[in-house]
Length: 248
Image (cartoon, rainbow, N blue to C red; front, side):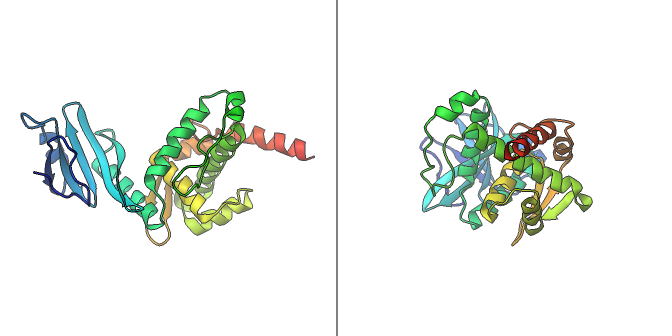
């Protein structure tokens, strides 16, 4: 039987949907019923677990610009129930700001592909705007990618310098401005949402988000490890020295 889940109808192939507040034991006990390919178990707020014989996948059902969409949030158990709920809440906070979380995800994949391409090929490829809102280019130049990765590192370093490794959006925006990264509030939220997807920060959503540095984020800020899509501290320093020499 097809049941409405946060405005999301089951796909054409037969599925079975259950509604409950999920626990680890619930998930461990789930199995694909005989004769079915998959079924969904809801955790509320549009978050559900898609159970297949190949694995268990977190997804979020949501609407944007009048269209029904779904967002992949990761694979259980690599992404726990708590982490999936945090991702759901972060995505809903973006929706409240009229930002499509699916576009953030697409931008992330695009930036990862761009980072693996040679700089020459990045600079010669045609860039086209994203159809939805036209906020960002489909393909970034090497310089644009470097600026974004440097700004993400700066966000982590601001948090590393903050009391209790935490701050709020308004304070973070001012601190970024003082460090040479003057961006809009929407751009800041896009960066924060991306960093949250990488699990280098945690969020407390509300009228103003609270941003908290994770251990992985601290290690990235200090150069003890590298997070793809975030500039290494030594690279950021080299880039700043080159820019200073050019301006001089």
